[in-house]
Image 1 (cartoon, one colour):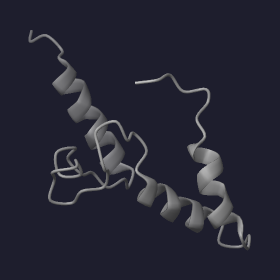
Image 2: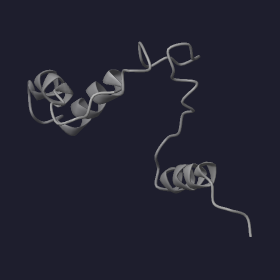
Image 3: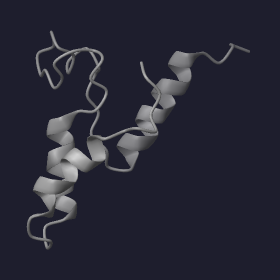
Length: 82
C-alpha cells in the first residue's frame, strides 16, 4: 500500500472541488511571475480582484455595498501574521 502524501490529498481536493463546479488554476500561473498574475507578491494571500468580483456578484441587489465590503473583508485582525 502506498503512503498518502500531501500531493494525493491536494489532488483529491482539487478534483472534488472541480466536480462541484469550482475552477482550478495552478498557483504558479497566478503567482507574481505567472502567466495569469493575480497577486503582487507571495505575501498577498487574498486575491483582491477575485474578492471584488465575488462581493459584487453576491451583493448585486444591494447598491453601494460591493465598493464598501472589500476593505472591510480585507481587515483581517484575527488572522495570524505571515
